[in-house]
Every structure is written in structure tokens, then in C-alpha cells.
Amino acid sequence: MSTTRRTPEQLRSFRWFGPNDLRTFGQRSRLRQMGLGPEDWVGKPVIAILNTWSEINPCHLHFKVLAENVKKGVLQAGGMPIEIPVLSLAENFMKPTTMLYRNLLAMETEEVLRSHPIDGAVLLGACDKTTPALVMGALSAALPFIFVPGGPMLRGQWRDQTLGSGTDAWKYWADLRAGKITPEDWCEIEDGIARSHGHCMTMGTASTMTAITETLGLTLPGASSIPASDARHWRMAAESGRQIVENAWTDLNPSRFLGKAAFHNAIIADMAVGGSTNAIVHLIAMAGRAGVKLPLDDFDTLSRHTPRLADLRPAGRFLMEDFYFAGGLPATLAQLLDLLDGDCQTVNGKTLRENVVDAKIWNGEVIRSRENPLSPEGGTAVLRGNLCPNGAVIKHSAMEQRFLQHRGPAVVFQNYPDLSKRLDDPATKITADSVMVLQRAGPLGAPGMPEWGMLPLPKRLLEAGVRDLLRISDARMSGTSYGACILHVAPESATGGPLALVRDGDIIALDVSARTLTLEVSDEELARRRAEWKPAPRHYERGYGALFLNEVTQADEGCDFRFLHFNGKPTPEPAIH
Image 1 (cartoon, helix red, strand yellow):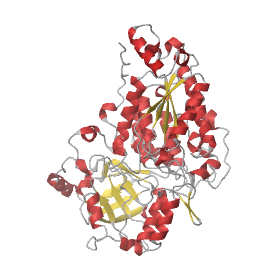
Image 2 (tube, rainbow, N blue to C red):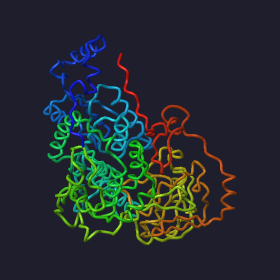
Image 3 (spheres, rainbow, N blue to C red):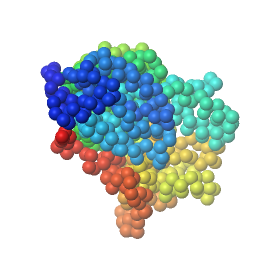
Image 4 (cartoon, one colour):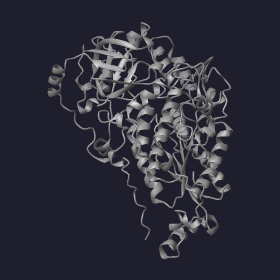
């Protein structure tokens, strides 16, 4: 790592504030208009704090205070903090899905950083799609940056039961439909499942993505595990502010040090903590912005060789608060140093190995040692076969193990409204051996690839005690979800992929150990069906939605926009006239 320090004249912001000409006069005069003077900007790195706070985003409600702590650190280190609001992706409220808008936030992040007098950035994020979006945009902008995760909320509580957000919502919803709890019980659960600010406290997508971001070296060590309401979280934010000022002086730029080894480290971390299947789509997109190709086969290869160590819901028993006090991500990574590339650089100027080598496990039930893993391989598998030529994924660690090998007849739903309409209709013949198939739920078909992959089960089966079925779709699944759900089928049904050709009664065979998913229909019959297939009308004909449909790639390619892919040619700096 280079320790060469830039001079004030070499700072990027100097182009805006340094020269003595008419344009710079106008820019400096506007700084004075905001109550600032030369002591605020002369010889100081300008640090942007990109804040995804919003009053409709409960995961980020504390970000005003979080930003103030980052500013404190920036000022202590001699920098000039500038807080800039960017799009807030409120997971529970944005429809049809925040995934539709991940790329919009990534575009905004890139352009905000490039177009302003910024020498370094601190990215405030937490909720599912926010983390990859901010990182994607910052990598494309190619400036020094540090990610500050918002942290998980406190554990939920209902009577004597510990609740995990998302995971227990699905569980008790099934119990309500089966008549095992009352509507009054359900209301009490609603009141106690989200007790503080912060993102989901299970190892859902939010916790998975912040853990991945830490493993990539984009946060301070241990940052992703700290609960949102813990005072150590504020101190981490201030330290991040101090660190980014140093990185602006040394031009420590993640877009230069993130290579394939770092992304392989991130996959290993994902598998070791039993992370969300959504991580696959986001990691491919993030790697693409760094010029790294990350094929699906890399995920499966690394999963087969990575033990699962963290016993976290939905695939395990504990929650993120337990994980933090058990040693958090650093303790987990310390157990895996023989599998990781410990020489990968991180934003604090040290290597990954230096950051975690001394981390200890304090609770061996929550974080297992290498000698006592929960399972010898990771919790996610990549499937191939004639139903998913370009791949599909399954989180086999979070499903009933009887489905590891399964063969059954398909029950097909053409879209989500069709599922909602016919699920409990007695004429829809779903049994415990059926394979539920949902079409038109992918990036183009839904559109936006919503988290519809955990298809609800018919009430009559729930009442009979059935809690899992094999389900297949081109959708995603919430990272807090569980069940035998095959996801991200590519190519998706909306493009005429094989999933579009499945009919009721077709036999589908799954073999997780062999990593195969097979539609037992002859090639000749599939060819006949393909010739008859017709695409549905486009959902959007104007605006951002039309842009999304025109440019989004498939799940195995990360669902990024084609025109935003890394092409080896840096975008020119803006002209200042």
C-alpha cells in the first residue's frame, strides 16, 4: 500500500476552490453564503456523507445522529464534511420492490460523487438494497470511500418468545392461517417484532450485505456486527469519519484494491454465516462495477469448501445481537483465514488478516469453531439443468431436508395475482409432494424481481401440519425467509426461458447434492411449447421503469444496467468553466 500523501493542491476539490478565477470566485462566494470561510476549506479534504435517511425508512431512522457522529470524526481529523441526501430504499414500503430501484440509487451515488467537489465519501446504509447500491455507485465514481453500516435492531420479543424480524413473521403467519394462534396473538407479535431502529436482526439480506461489505474491506473492522442502538455504533461512525480524511490524503481508493480475491473472500463469508441468497445477485453486480467477473460457479465451488459457522436465523437459532457479543464477523473470519486471502487490503490501511487474526469467539454456540461447524459446507447451492440453463439458487440450509432430493408434479401459476387468486381454491390440486411453480416474477416479468420466491402454502396443507413444499420461481426471496425455495431461475420466464414452458402435471426433479434441477419433458415437446409461447405486454412504456426494462440484465449477471457495466475506460472528470 502506498503511503504517499497528496498535497492540498492535489486534492480533487482544489479544482473547485483553489484557482483564482471568476468561476472559483462564484463557488467560494456560495460557500460564504452558507456561513463558511477559508478556514473551512483551504487545505482540507472535502468529505461527502451520503445519507439515505428518510421518515419512511425505519431501518435508517437514526441516520441523522449517525451522520452527526461521522461529521464529528471528519472535523476532528481536519476535513470538511458535507452531508448530501440520496434516495432512501425503504424495503417494506416501496412497491413493487426496492430491487427495481437499487440501480437508480447506484446511478445517483455515482453522479453525486463525480459532479461535486468531493475528495472522499462516507456512505450511510443498512437496509437490503441500499448497501450494494451505494457500493456499486461509489466504485464507479472511483473515489476513496468508507461504508458505515446502520446496524441491526434489537431482538424482538413476544411473551417468552424471542422474535426475529421476517423469519418469525413468516412462521407465525402460517400458524395464524392454520388456526394455531389467535388474531390477538398476531397483533401482539406485530407490536413486539421490531423494537428499535436498525435493520433486520436476523441474518437476512441486510446483515448479509453489511457482513460482505466488511469482508471486502470497505468498513472498519467489526463495524457490520454492532447493534444500531449500541453506543459503540456512534463511536465507529466517528472513527470512520477520521479514517476517510486520512484516506483522502493518501488516495486509498477501493476501486483500485478490490480484485477477485476480495470478492471470493466475500463469498466465503456469506457461506460461513448462512447468508441470504440475495447476496449472489448483489455481489455479482458489485464485482462488475470493479471490473471483476463473478460467475455463479464460483459461488457453488466456494460453498462446497466453506463450513457454516454462524448459527443465525433463518438457518439457525440466534440473532445479530447474539452474534455481536459472541465475537461478530471478525471472530468468524479469524476461523477461516486458511480459506481467505488475508493479504487483501482494507480501508483502514491494514490487510484483512491483520484486522481479524486476533479476534476471539466468546460464545461457541453462536459462532462455531472450525473443529465444530454447523455443517461442512455453506448453506447455499447453485443448480443447473434444463429448467435453469443459466443457473438457479437454493438455500438448502434453511429448508426441510427431505427436499434435498425430490421429484413431484408441477402446479403452475402464471403470475403472482394468479397465485393469490387460486392458492386456496379446492380446484388447485396442491399436495405435499407437489412442486409449486411461479412464472413472470423475474427482473422483466414482475418487473423488478420482487421477493416473491417464498410462495405461501395452501391453508388446507397448513392446517394438516405441512410447513414446507418445493417451490420454484425466477423471483428472489427475502433473506429472512426459509423453505425449499428455488430462486433466480435464469433465463427468466418473461424472456421465454424454460420456466415459461412448464405446465401443470409436468414432473420436476431436484437433487441438491448433484446440483441439478430437471424438467422431465422431452426436448421435442419443449420445442413445440416454445414455438407457441408469446411474451406478455411490457409493464412500463416510459420513465425509469422503461429504462429498467430496456437495460437490466438477468439474475446470473447481477441485474445491473448494461450501460453501467465496467468497460475499463474511466469516466472523465467534469469540466469546470
